[in-house]
Length: 583
Image (cartoon, rainbow, N blue to C red; front, side, top):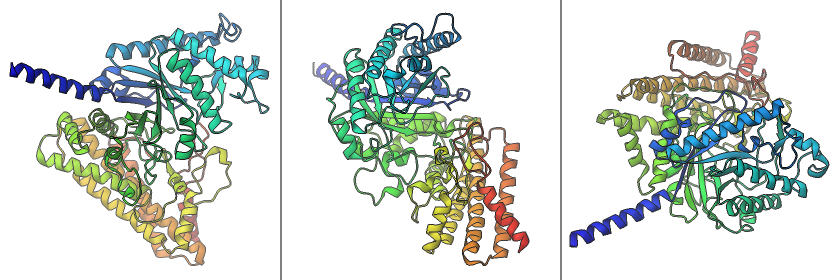
C-alpha cells in the first residue's frame, strides 16, 4: 500500500512538474529573407521542431495569412473572380492551409507572423477617402480602418479555423512578397495607437475566437525598450490568457553591447523572450558565435549594469512564459550558410533550457554534445572552450570589451558588409552603415584611444587563432559537422584578420589626415597584411565547399538587389593606398 501511495505521489509530482514545463511557449521561426527564395532549413519542418522540444512554430515567409483573403464580404471587386490577383490569393491560401496541417500533424501549434497594416491595393484605392490620412497613409484613426480590420480578422479565422493565433508586428512593414498589397505602420499616435490596436485584437481574436495573440513590442517610439512607455500601453489593457507580449532580449536590436531589455519582467501580462540564433549582425552562422550562454547567464559586458541581466534572473518572474528562437534569418542578403550547425547549437540550448529552466546552461550544452556525438573528454572540453571563446572574440572583433562603444557604432558591420570611415552624404532613409566608423574613430582619436582600440582588434584575431586550433581537435559522430566546425573557425579567423588590418590601415590614415604626417612604413605593412588576409579569405571559399558566402568590403544601404553602393572598407583602404603611392 505504501508503494502504491508513493507511486501515485511521484506521478502527481512529476505531472505537476511537467505541467509547469509545458506551460511555457517554446516557439521557433525561420525568418526568410524578404523578396528572396525561401531559406532551406531543417527548422522549416514541424517534425524536426517537435523532436527538438518546440511546441509552436511561427511562420514568417512574408506572404502573410491575412494576404490570403479575398475580402468578398466587404467588396467582391477587391479580388474579382477570374483575375490573376485572385488566383494569387487562392494559391497563398493553399500554402497557409498546408503549413497549418503540417504543424498539427506533427503535434505542435502554429502562429502566423503578421505585419499591421497590410491590405489589398485595390481595397485601399476603393476606400481611400475613408481609411487614409491627409498623407495618403492607411490610418487607425479612421473608423472605417478599424471596421475593415474586424472584417479581415473574421475572414481570416473563418478561412483558416485551425490557425492557433497570430504574431503581430507594428514596427516595420515588409511588402516584398505580397505584390497585390500595400500598407504602412499603424502607430501614428504613440501609446494611444498601440492601445487601440491591442483592444481590437484582444476583443476580436483572444475573446471572440479564443486564439492566441503574440504582440511584438518591436516598434519605434519606445514601446520596445522604455519601461514607462511599455507600462503606459500594457497597463491600459486588461490581461487575457490568450494575449502575450513578445520582447527581444536586447534593449534594441540583436547586438552585443546592448543591455538586457528593461521591459522584461514588468507589468501584468505574460511575456515571451525573442532570441536570434543566427545572429544577423554577427556572421549569420558563417563562423562560431555561441550567444545562448550570454543570453541565459548574462554577457560579460553586463557585469556593471544594474537590474536584470539574464534569463536565469528572469525565469522566476511571474510574467516569463517562454522563449521564441529565430533559428534562421533576420536582416538582408548574406552571408549564406550551407551548414546550420552554429544556429542549431544556439537554438538547441535556448529551447531546451526554456523547456526546463531548472537546468543550468552548461547542463543543456552537455545534452547538445551528447546528441551530436561529441563523446570523448578532450573533444567535449575543446568544444566547450571554443564556443565560449567565440562570444568573447565576436565582442572584441565587432565592438569593444574595453573602450567606449556607442550604440549607433555597431552598424558599421551588418549582414555581409564591412563599412569604412567615409562620412557620406547618403539619404538616411537608405539606412547607410557608412559614417559610423568615422564617428567612432573621431571619438577615440580625440580621447587618445584610437590605436589602443586597434590593438583590441588584433587581440580578437588571437582569440580566433585559438578557436581555429581548438576546432582541429574536436571529434564527433557527424563528420560533415566536424569539418564545418574547422571551416567556419578558419573563416572567423581570416575575416577578423581582414577587420583588424583594415581598421589599422584606416586608423593610421585617419591619424595622418589629422596631423598631416603619415607613417609610411606602418601604412605599407598594414595594407600588405590586409591584402594577404583578403586573398586567404577568398582562397578559403575556393577550397572548402562547405564554406559560407563571404563578406563584402562595402557599406550597407537599403536598396535592392545589391544592398550596397561604392563606399565601404575597400574604398577607405584604397584611399590611403593611393595616397601612399604619392607620398
